[in-house]
Length: 295
Image (cartoon, rainbow, N blue to C red; front, side, top):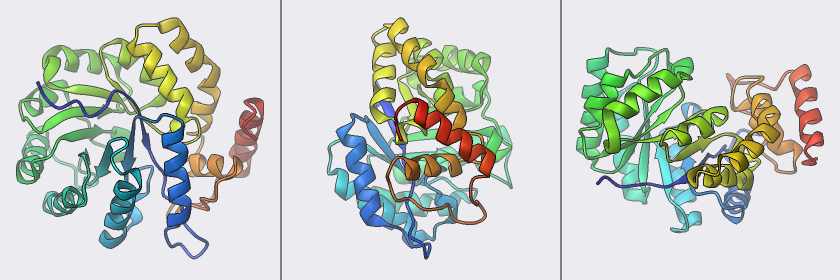
């Protein structure tokens, strides 16, 4: 059996910045403690939500190191170290492993893209050189590249590729992939809205944006679903669907940072090229959070 990294809700944590654009480590510590206090089951450092694409290598590794040290073994820390440059991904991954990350999150190559065989070769090359449990991350809306079920099957044969974060929005594809891979590949939803159906199909949970502001609720939703108490899970999902949708009314992570600022954290803006949330979407966010008593 392969390593099970976690069951439940893993938060793709944001990276708070100061007005001058530097990383705000004091605020990051507050966010980490907020997550752990409210039963988040894992933290993903430097994912898309953490704006890793705008960080220097030194910043990227400093955030991973900080989160690993502050979490201090209480829950797993998964380091986002994927890149469109396979060699660079190996270098970054080796450093993350040295810093104590429990696993890696490896996004598909973006912009230059590749073939399905290229995906197999690239992911295998990374994990075979780093030798640490890894999650492959499929998000075609951000990368213009989709991992096909047959490709997942080939990847599932590698002992270090233990799971997938699936955000392709295609349940039919998820079903086919699960039927091909069986127990050789665990599944986490990469889309908050699809968490319940993916867990009901046999997934282990979610890597979540929503849980940045509602960690307890997402933990509970997944726990109920894993226990096959689908009515309770559905109750939470239906209650917070409006929040989940509001978090994608602008380019992520712009809305989740706005939401965190609104509920009392000091996360400031995203780094360029991402910019401030448009006023219409911001008003909608305020309305939704007020409805739920968050502000």
